[in-house]
Image 1 (cartoon, one colour):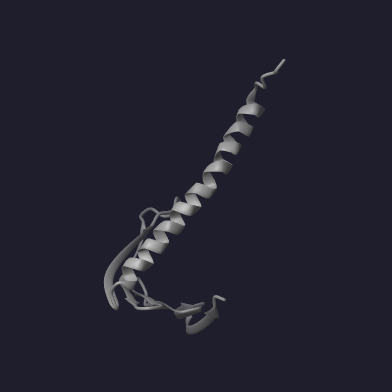
Image 2 (cartoon, helix red, strand yellow):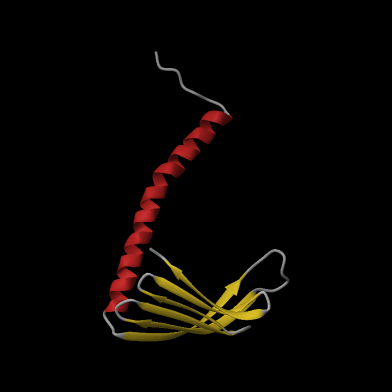
Length: 115
């Protein structure tokens, strides 16, 4: 005889199990998209684009907006230069990230190793 589990705990367990099975598929899909993105970017030596980023928060009355430029240089350089609301830049070259901008009231340059 097979007993069937009922009640909120079994439903919760089923939902969690389905979510756990869905996560690896989602990660694989995101990885595939990233591989395709870099393959497309790598097909050209250099690409430039303008961007506008809007961040939404329940604490703010309106979205926080920043804008600037993105630059990709093959094979391994990605730069993000923010112009508004304040100037800052992030540059990734290979395994190194460099941030330049205002932190705690003064201009700073920081370099981090990704590896």
